[in-house]
Amino acid sequence: MKEEVRKRLRAAGRPLFMTGSGISAESGVPTFRGEDGLWKGANPRDLATPGAFARDPWHVWQWYDWRRGLIAGVSPGRAHLAMAEFRGCSGAGVPVVTQNVDGLHQLAGSTDVLELHGSIWRLRCVRCGREAEDRVTGLTEVPLCACGGELRPGVVWFGESLPADVFSRSLALAAEADFVLVVGTSGVVQPAASLVSVARDGNAFIVEVNPEETPLKGLTDVTFHEAAGEIVPELLNGNAE
Ligand code: BV8
Ligand code: ZN
Image 1: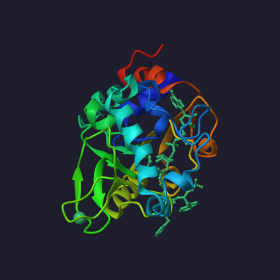
Image 2 (image 1 turned 135 degrees about the vertical axis):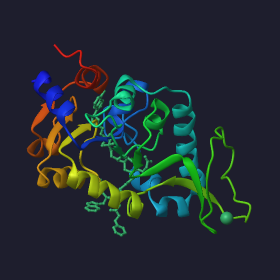
Image 3 (image 1 turned 120 degrees about the vertical axis):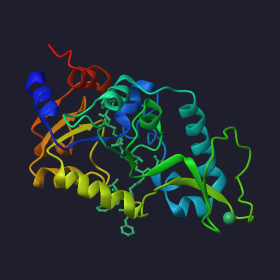
Image 4 (image 1 turned 90 degrees about the vertical axis):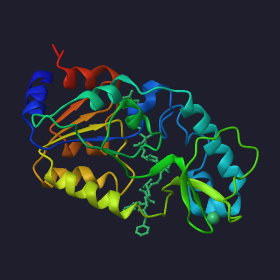
């Protein structure tokens, strides 16, 4: 089956990669819903909603500062690197639609990354809206904008809309794709997960990589219940048995 998938991917005219936190697990970044997941013991409503930030910005910042510190110390995994290096039959790189905010696809060399849920490395002022890249970790208080407003992580929280330009381009790519590789997402967060159904409706050949079974099962042509770092290089680099 791996050889069949490799052949289809190499022949695909409009391939697309979609990823979730599972692709960064190998790098040491915790997933959200796994055994040692970020949500274990924490309530997303207390950490990843505008209400949580309004109620207690420092509590939210302590969690994001801890995540930023952790992510700053890790490297892209073999799956990130294989995706960045892969060239489709047109010779171009493949766009990556990711739910991840860790920036590891870009660090691996992918140049067309659509961050559906924003970036943990961007901060936005809640007062004037000014947004900037920021890599400072080890915060001791809520960071402030030059205008005096509080700075928040530039990510999409529950109840917030996804960046319209990023989401509409992701929709178009999913609708046009003839091959989609979905790696490391539990497929429960919307509207990101709905992009797989859009690809399905567009008759894409859909391959999922996830050690666990997910709600995407009914939408995929092939599922490899393996770790991303193992199988994605095999499928993309060609040393599949
Ligand atoms: C919105 C913040 C409304 C950034 C996150 C229907 C339609 C629209 C909305 C909804 C809807 N139903 C419900 C909603 C509301 C909500 C939602 O989806 N709730 C779910 C939980 C039911 N959606 C929203 O609120 C979205 N906004 O719709 O706004 C609106 C509409 C119009 C106008 C105004 C408002 C916003 C969603 C974004 C929320 N932000 N995070 C951050 O801090 O990171 S979501 C959070 O989950 C993460 O960001 C992550 O991106 C996302 C998805 O998680 P996954 O990446 O899939 O990770 P997970 O841990 O779940 O799974 C990891 C998988 O990897 C596992 O399956 C595991 O088996 C696998 N794995 C592990 N190891 C490996 C591996 N795979 C491969 N290899 C390995 N080695
Ligand atoms: Zn400001």
